[in-house]
Image (cartoon, rainbow over all chains, first blue to last red; front, top):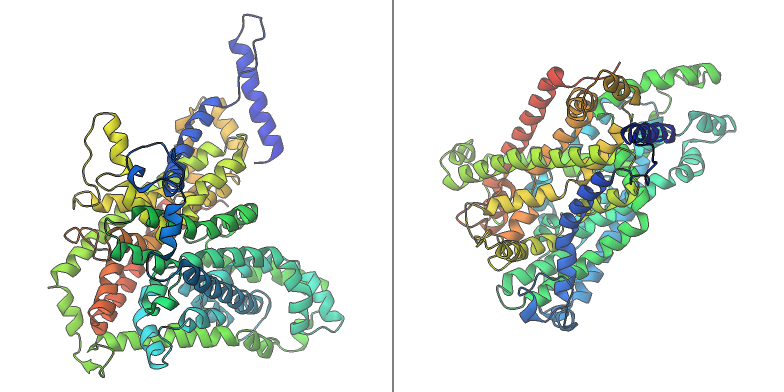
Length: 303
Length: 323
């Protein structure tokens, strides 16, 4: 919202107010847009209530979880967390550390490989550039399911199934073209004169990439890192396909094993662990929300 | 232009940067030959090339070959021609999964986009606390794909769940939403609509690009708010609507996690939540019919391709690009 536009809109509304209250007595300034705020706040409550309820329920004794709408626990208890942490037979510590390892590796892989590819697509002039770029854009629309089976058979033959390698290695080979696209868009916004000045000073492409582009790319790299982390941490299908041993389970799989076993028995533990698995995403979101929101707005994002 | 559609940017780029570099710098490009960056470019792209061939193109080809075979991972694939494809048409469960998926896409995408557009339009009026609203509405999009949210959803819509308690307040006795085949898919559709945050952010960025003068002029002409929305906002925003529509449709076809978690991996009750990808997963990894599953993957790929093509073809009629 540009400031001047906002001013005029507000001013116009004030004029309207003034003409309507012709009684001469200037009444208290009506709160601006109060109806819009009312509707939006109602929306916020509806949107957020399930999450608030989930958090509240995780601190309630088992018997009260479904007996009251009040999201806040009257009898505060940590039992759900203590029981839930080990209820699936393997500790959530294991799941969390597995997820952390996978997510961090994928973050590094995406940042390195996607920024290299993005530099080439955004700045370099090479044979078949259009063809390859089009191919890269095409894979943006390629569903994971389209290559899931053959990829699995390849990793199966490599004996990589039930390790983290199938989740991590492709990301070191710029598999997630979405981030290439995001970084290409960002690099195009960096003035070319900077590269050219460096080139005149005798810098090669490696030098230009590391000393000129990468430092300026930092905001986009942070967006990449944050989104990669969140998506990997919450990714389910791939981890479901590749990991079968409980000691290798990541957070989504650990949580899912509640559903297999606890049909009916321990809702409390399941809800508590759901909260645990949401915490990293929420924390990352809170820390980086401004950048994330702008990043999404400026590239158009899947998800 | 924040959300230029990919294709457009490709074509625009050479025009955009050819002029300045040609003028300001004494034409390094020409002197060393036209494709001066070949070696560097292919070096930078090495990981990407290995990835695109190793994990996309070759697997796609291999997948097509597998789709023409009977393959259970343990023994060698056995050639059966188009047997898998013809078998699809007589597979009741497959047809059911197609029906369920089309229903899911047909309702969840418009619902999500409508919510996104309405909220974005409401937020784009110079409201205070815009940042707060934006963040809150966006949060479900980030969390939505997680197993935890699907678990939560299961509890909300179960027989004694949150929703039925709210209804009970008003004296309405709610159904078993998850357990009733009439409603189960709708809980998934609602879950998808709940995550309207991402398209909302993209709409917001688009709305900011619409010149305010248009609204001022329309107001002078006596147009009401609703009329302005349909006559100015929607047409001006149509490229962004198009972009979101394509993206969300592709995403909707790939929905897996909520269907798996809410139905406990089975797609029930009586296959009412058997989304396409869930059936594909079950065929490939539960019954190890990998040839069959590969055929399904190719059909999905083709269907998404057709949808995208239809969107692009229709876009000429309703998407207006500003000059």
